[in-house]
Amino acid sequence: MKTILISLLSVLLLAAVVACSGNDEGNTESDAESSVRKQEPPEVPAPDLDALAKKTGEIRDSANPFVTLETSMGKMTLELFHDVAPTHVDSFIARTQEGFYDSTKFHRIIDNFMIQGGDPKGDGTGNAGYFLKQEFSELPHMEGTLSMARARDPNSASCQFFICLARNRSTQSLDNQYTIFGQLIDGYDVLHKIGQTPVQPNPKTGERSQPVEPVWLVDAYMSDIEGNPAKKG
Image (cartoon, rainbow, N blue to C red; front, side):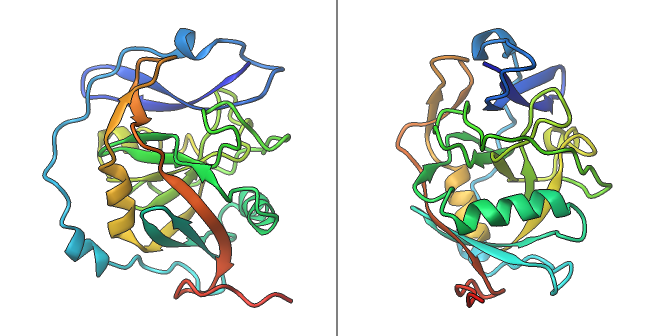
């Protein structure tokens, strides 16, 4: 089974980190075979959650759609960049509206890097039954950036997504390599609460990124900028 990777550039070495899987027609490496050693992320001060609760992201285009992710740690509302990555956004909206993401896990969390979810299997090997062509842009991966996980093939993104926790060397290495299709508007405190989740080594890869206790994406729904459910029709 194909392992989907997010390539992570560490200070001293290049690290490939496991993301999403499911394309049996391409790379057949197992999780263990495809993982390489990576430097532990640098220690950073604990986030000020009170300050982050007041933080809001800059809206790119109010005509873009918005989505709210209700998690077991709170809600996050994101703008979807239909003007940048229309195919990815249309796919994400379709899956959201059919309930595809409801009751799934953030199965992979790396502090100071990103949180990853959207896998129907919950272990990094699931997909939506189809794959998307890349829509890379000049937008940077920074705190709150919503981007799509993929395998080595640039056109192998499906349903798994990640949200960045910071702008640093690790996330900079993702620029022009992964399709950015949104940005967090509200819920920065929730994002960092999830980012601070205690993790343990993944039994398949050895990467310290598997939550000790599940972090759930309880419900995903289209919304307005304030996070209120969008009216249908």
